[in-house]
Image (tube, rainbow, N blue to C red; front, side, top):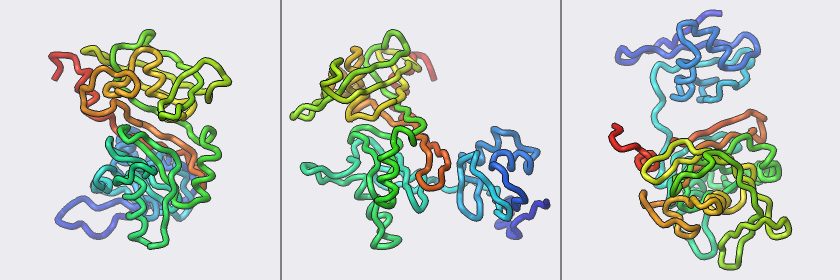
Length: 307
């Protein structure tokens, strides 16, 4: 198979490289074979920087299946930054789903009491620009003050598919919390039954008849200055689950007055949805999206004297 380059080289820049697929393969294996001068990490960087296109569309999943006659383009230059709107960044979209990085302070969707600007409203306006009949559907929520990865469906069918199989479909949900104090032991599992009061406060119980089973795995990744950065893997996705569970073990999330916090070092709730990995409801492809830990979290647990 021959490498064919795009003919145009604007302003002397390197040209994009175009490679035609001759037999079924996974994207990473194909690129390693066709780009012998690049190692696996180089190729991962190309994927992360959105420099790999298949038939003109950006793909970032290293294990994406390729079919004969498809054209893989290795772009010479990084793609422009993902589309940003006030309160969110678009990470990914296809005909079925939209994935965003939501900023703290933005509601996921409107409630009876709160009609402020919402992630749902911003994305609804966005898809209607393409076609006024387009709609979006919420799959899961993040609290207003929680930032990070969040996903929406572009049809009611996809919404139902994702919600009905959420636990089986979701491969990874990792959150990062900035908590008061340092949990001991530094890793563990918190299990309780959660229920919500009429005052909208979620309570923890050890009585199986008194709420929904809720399981949170935690691991301290860094600690300094009376705070810890904790990675959390959810086995269940109940409302306020992480916030209640961290308070249960005596280490409430910084800034979380509702659930026991005494301090507010970063001026917001110290909770961030870092990673969401799931099986695509239509294509069956395993997808993963990451939103970097906010720098304000890291600044609190930076040891004195560090650069």
